[in-house]
Length: 181
Image (cartoon, rainbow, N blue to C red; front, side, top):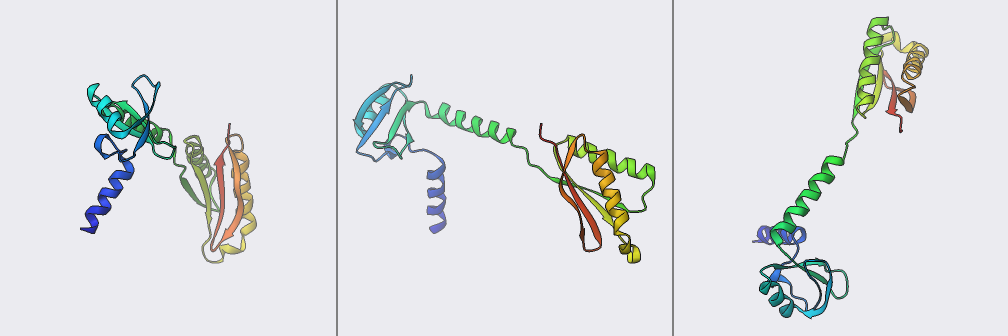
């Protein structure tokens, strides 16, 4: 039983109150064209809406008195869902893409990593450049820092350094983010 009531409460939080569900004694009424009709009792407003063949929808319950509008609820709900989809489309989640290499990287391999990082940055993602050390190679951190700085220099026209080269265990890491235009 508790689960059902939680679901109902959640649904009520998402969906606005309509028609008979509106329990306020006084409400501010707005018609289909958007002009205010005045303050009515809930029952009077509901009869006006039903006579027009439309629904009475609670728009804002935080104002005093609460604001209700006479509209077709199906169209209203469709418009709200469409707005939510548009807002979701406009969002861009920035992800961190990783480019791994060793400090003894060959020129061609380095160019491949630069091209990968370039593609990631063009796509609006951040790039985590990771130089991996094995065994005694950890002694050559200066070479890794030089490599990462060279990479930052080669990509400076499209990116900026968010986190400078830093040692992270047996790795040397640098994070690049796309330049803001």
